[in-house]
Amino acid sequence: MKCIEVSKNLDILLDGEIHDFRHKKIESHLNICGSCRAKFESLQAISNSIRQTLPGAAPSSLDERVLKAFQDHHAKRESAPPEEKAGWFQIPKLAFAAAFLLFALFCGAAFELGKLSANNVSVSVADINPAPKRIENADFGADHPGINEPEQLVKTKFVKVPVIKEKIVTKIACVDRDQITAHKTRKDNSAQDTFAINNSINDKEFLTQTNLKDFQPVSEIKPIVTKQEE
Amino acid sequence: MSRYIEQNLIDRSRRGDAEAFGEIYFALKDSIYGFAYRMTNAGSIAEEITQEVFVFFIENAEKYDADKGSLFSFLCAVARNKVLNHLKKSGTKLETNNFEEVEIVDSSNGSGRSPLKNLLDKEFSAKVEECVFRLSPFQREVLLLREMEELSYEEISQITSLSIGVIKSRLYRARQTLVSELSPYAKSEKVNIYEVHRS
Image (cartoon, rainbow over all chains, first blue to last red; front, top):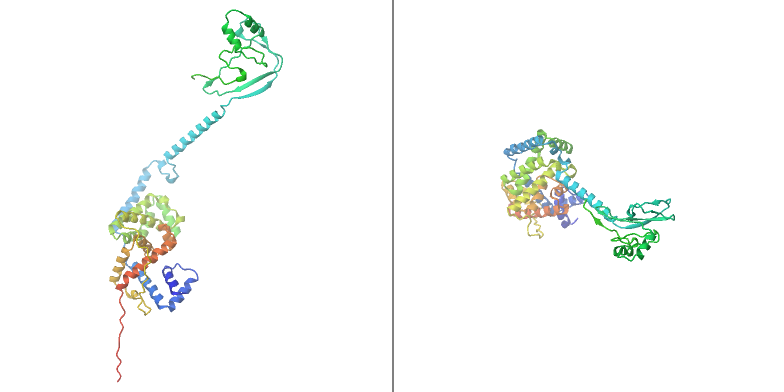
C-alpha cells in the first residue's frame, strides 16, 4: 500500500474500525515506513492525552437533586387519578373527542348524501290486475251513483319524490264523462268549471276527467312541493 | 452494564423503583457530566445539563427504545441536544467556516518516531485540553464521544444522527487540527555528539 492511502486510514485504524484485509496491509506498511508510523503514533498520543484529561466526577450536590426529582415524579403519579396512570396506553381525551366528532360528522354527511341521491323522481309502472271494484267518492255527494272502475287492466303509476320535510299533495277525483259533457253545454257562467275542464287530464288510460285546478297534468308530472312546517 | 441488566433496571425504574434508578444514575452520570463539561468547558453548565438529562429520563422513560441503542446513547443524545442549544444561545458557531483540507503535518523528524509520543507531562495535557476546546462543536463532539467514551462509529451515528462517512470526516479533520496545533510544543530529540580522539 502507498503512504497516501495509508495516511487516509490511520484514524480508522486507531479507532479499530478496519475489519477487512486492509488491516494487515496497513500494519505491514507501518512496520516498514517510518513516516507513516510517526503519524500514527502522533494520533495515539493525542488520543491518550484526551482520555487522561478527564474532567472528573460529577459534583455530589447533583445526586440529591436528581434523586429527589425521581421521588417527586413518582409520588405525583401515585396520587394522580387512575386514568392518568395509564401512561402511553391512555388515549388523549381531546384526541378521542375530536375523532368521535369527526366520525359523527362523517356519518351525518353520508346520510345526507344518501338522501340527496334519492332525490330523483322516478316513475315505474307496475302492472296491477286487480279485480274490478266500485269506487265510492264522497266529493260527488251521497247521491252520486259512483262509477265502476273499468274492468280493463289498470296501470298504476308510482312516483317517487323526496318526502323528508316536504309533502307532495295530490288529488285525484273521478268524474263521470256525462257530467263533463253536461258542463260543456251549460250556458251559464261557469268560468270556474270551464277552467277546471280545460285543465283536466285527458288521460286515455285512466278515462277520468278531474278538477285539476292548480294541478299539473299527469303526463307532465312534476313533483308539487308543498312545504309544511313539521 | 449488560443490555439485559440495563433493561431490567429501566423497567423497574419506570415502575418507581428508586434503587434501580439510582443504579442507572450512578453508572452513567460521570460520563454524561464529562461529555457536557468538555463540550461547554463550564462546570456549572455541565452540572445543569446533566440534571436536565436525567430529569428528562425520569419524565420520559417510556420514550427509550432498547432496539435503537443503549441507554447511554439515548441519554447522550439528549445531552448533546442540550449542549448544542446552549452553545447556540451563547453565540458559539457550531461549524468552522473553513472546510478546506487541513494540511497533514509530518511531525516526524526523519527518525521515524513521533515527538508527540514523548509528551506525557501535565503541560502537554493542558494544551491538548485547550486545543480540543478550540475545535468547532461539531468536530469536538465526535472526538469526545470517540476518545472519552470509546464509542463505535455506529453508536456515535445513533447519538448524533450523522452518517458514518461524516463522522469519519469530522474525526479526521479534528485530529489533523490537533496534530497541527500541538506540533510546536513537541520536544525535539537531542542528538549527542561525541568526539573521538585517537590516542
